[in-house]
Length: 172
Image (cartoon, rainbow, N blue to C red; front, side, top):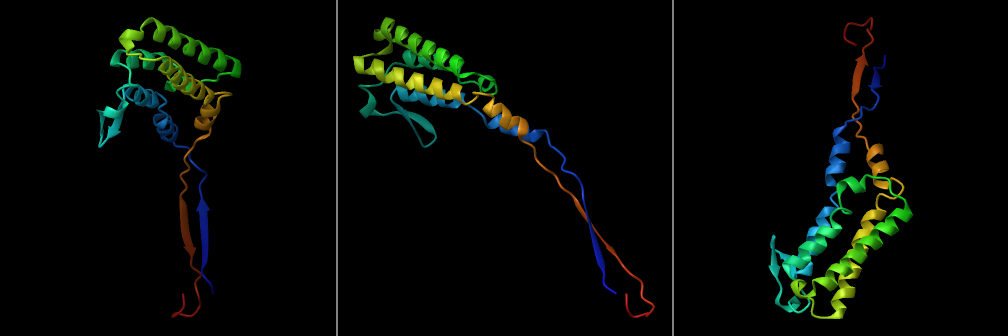
């Protein structure tokens, strides 16, 4: 007689930590820190930020970079990423942050190290693009939906062998 193998599969068990792990990986504020350093003419080399001599004429001061990164930070947060934002709100908020950026650049041009009008447009594009794209991510609950749908399946399979007895003593 043939041995028969029975497999029992248990239903998937959602692990809540997979959602937490995914949420932990969403860090829209990380780009704000990169932008802050880049505005100051720094590059990340061998694990640390260093001033690049070639960028000094276009770099702004630490105060300017700090203020501008603080304007972007509220829109580039984990809370915003998991919100449900509509297109009109995204556009209004992005434009308001870009306008505030221009006001601060014009009012504080000396303190920020602004040397030319080209820097005004360049910084505007950076701030607007980062803010707009970051706010677009949660549009219609995109990231929130991804997190809510994320589950990790744990499946256990138990194999059993049902052995048939034979009337012959040497066969099993």
